[in-house]
Length: 291
Image (cartoon, rainbow, N blue to C red; front, side):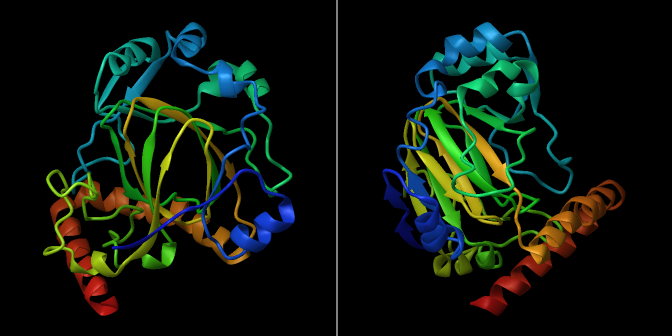
């Protein structure tokens, strides 16, 4: 892989943000965007337990999906408070995916400010909290609706690997899915890495970025960017989504949700193994073509 560090700025105005990052579709870390938010110091494990500790949540392990895996189906369920107790006591490779904590505790929306000064189109009904125990992994994927993301880390450290959408076939994208067939787990550690370059040689040519997020860091991820995240510590982050204003990209995101995903779901139910094998063949054909 050909990786560069993500640019880091302490603060940035709209003109510079759009010129240097938004328009060329390049990620950036903004260090001071969140430091004036009440959430910066207020949000912690005990506070969350006090407001939503009894809510039932789905939790996800590190196992990658296969031909039979339903889309976004949780691997287990617990209460948010019990989950926090589990991941606070030591390494626990479980994460919470797309938990809309703000539905259960709408007062939390008063603890941050939407960064409308940087870009338009934020989906203000759906800020999302992402929580993971030390060692948990969000496998390589891109967001299905192709929205732009501002992802702010509030607790713990998280390693993030990023690639532009155009690198999809070097990453062995599964047809009709937003996922990579390759396993990037611990890619940075030769002893623990599951990334087999002999099986996935095109990955060597993929050009991307990497960064470690810390408390208060806000990562701008342009729409369609592939991302793989590993929790170096137990922690949580919030994503604010902004709809992509490119008409072609909007239509592609709409197709991904109402067309692509439904076709994949149907085929996984009716002919899972045949569907999986067809997709696998396509994956390697496309990867070979871009090498």
